[in-house]
Length: 196
Image 1 (cartoon, rainbow, N blue to C red):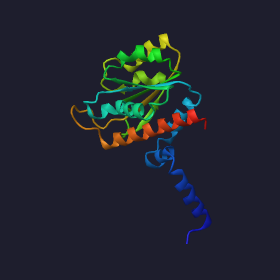
Image 2 (image 1 turned 30 degrees about the vertical axis):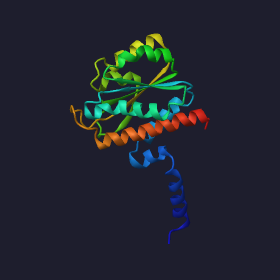
Image 3 (image 1 turned 120 degrees about the vertical axis):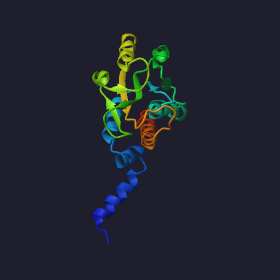
Image 4 (image 1 turned 180 degrees about the vertical axis):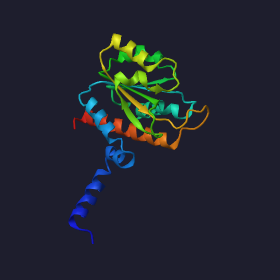
């Protein structure tokens, strides 16, 4: 028969399993990243998300998949906007500037040197040293250009690809990461609007 301590622990675990942030903790351990992201967005009143990547190159589509999902799920939030940058995110700089976000999330597949599906926040000063996906303009140049004409906080989220082969499907590991990061961003933004 389980003791009182283990019964309380099991009850707490069942309660925590309802929150997607806790699902991340149990399944893939990027909890630290999610809490860092939550901290970065806690005072955000207007948020834009730029999804980057080629949908023709397997896991390179990860940023686009997150953006597509959140564009659909958060379409009612007038202070949130997704931009589907694809392989040419520089084409969206005018629209991003016109939206005037307080925070810009940039999501892309990135070679982090970690296992496939790993999600990592990348410091702005480190983006020049990270190998991002197959888009034409380096992310560092894109950000430097945007910084000359708008004041906002930039948040970079990299997802480690398994494969970038042309014509292949997105890997299970990366699809799982897309689901987890999409759920987490949605939860963070909804709680920001609700004020809890």
